[in-house]
Image (tube, rainbow, N blue to C red):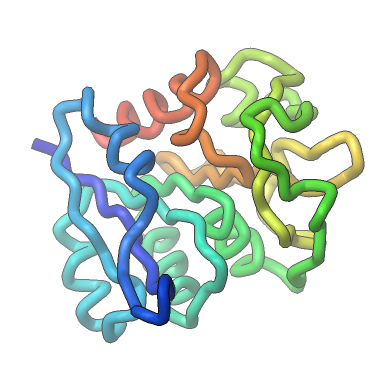
Length: 201
């Protein structure tokens, strides 16, 4: 059975510290014949690497802040050509790891609670375009920050120019999306999850 690493992050709630991710991320893979390995990103990098080496692919989840381990992990995954699906903050780490981009504030325009927040425009001849087979889809949007630029291929932007997806087609699967496909498993988001799973096989 193939194994997927799910990066989990530290957060505080009711003055108590926790480590985890939204259950929706785990639920997105429940119908696939894969095992899940949780990778707490705030462990030592040696521990993160040990858990990562158990996995055939990794999901870089969303969250409120990234750590140095995020960038070390992306470097490792990229160099080893391990399939990666980046979600929200995970996409931002992927983008910022390549080039001289910086975080930018996109709140409150992009921080919305509904699942059909806005359209994105998808570049032709990209991995994302080949997966969804559309040049325009509607996505959810609950991120407060985005990235200014990246050396990765920018495969989608919102109508106001915010980077919504990045990728490297030379890898087995290296795709990051700014929205949360796990929160709205419609036709297009399900295709993205399917393509990630197929890259492991």
